[in-house]
Image (cartoon, rainbow, N blue to C red; front, side, top):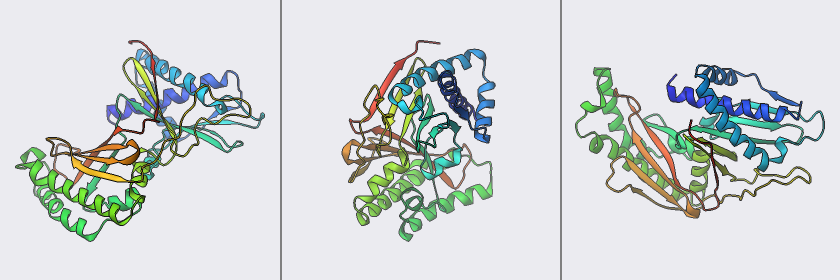
Amino acid sequence: MAIQTKTGKAFEYALLKEFYDRLNKSHNNVIIIDSEPYKTAKLCYEIFSEDDQGLYSLVSSAAINFLVDIEPRLSNSLNSDDVLQLEIVSDSEGQTGDVRDVLAIRLLQKWEIGISAKNNHRAVKHSRLSQKIDFGNKWIGLPCSSDYFGEIKPIFDFLTNLRDKDKSTKWTAIKDMHDNIYVPLLDAFRSELLRLDNENPEIVPKRLVEYLIGNQDFYKVIKGKSTVEIQAYNLHGTLNQPFEKVKPKAKIPKLKLPTRLIEVVYENNSKTTLIVSLNEGWQISFRIHNASSRVEPSLKFDINLISAPHTLFINHIFIGEK
């Protein structure tokens, strides 16, 4: 398991642990779902030093205290049967558009909130392109055309042949890799995205954002060196709900999903990155790159949110240096 994965899992565990410690003090009806993802995250947390664990806990505690203030249902139950379940989500959920890592659930209230935990990085998704991947169908439920697959086939055939001849061949051995591999793939991707949007007006922008950002409302908690940032992706209005007469201490506005794809252009002086601009203030970058040093017939997108609607709720909590 890569170190970035271990730190991410450790942070997930720290958030869940702080949820439990904070809420179990006053409520005995808080339980942790003892699943495989939970056990994995706990093991990752335990391999770090006490100092590192302390920092994870400090950051998590600051985030949880804030979330308890804006989500009254976390600390308010209907009765003794109203159990708050805490759970770490399987990574496979992210493949279906659910980007949440940690869940807090009250079945009796038919309520839940989720957290996407990020350790020093802001990427929203890491998606692949290959000859076999129908990104249209996988991302937005609309299949790519045979023209798209026809355009990308020679590129992936070339990469497959290179790998099959010598599995140790590195990407650096490909002459003019950006011009011969990256740009043709990005051109094909761009043309197909525009075609899908042209044939399905208003559908593609909304589904694209839901796939990349998440099809469930959630809080993103980003751990920095001396701060923790909390973003609220209230796309469907399920966050920030009151509990009976108890109101949240801050108001989280609902985000507007886009309905129009404005343009898809290359980033200035770049042969690796496309910028997708949508209405309502959404702008997303798609940077293509090889995921490993050795040649393989597949490439990866590092997808980042450049801008979101001005109604995106963001809160910074300063926690001091380690």
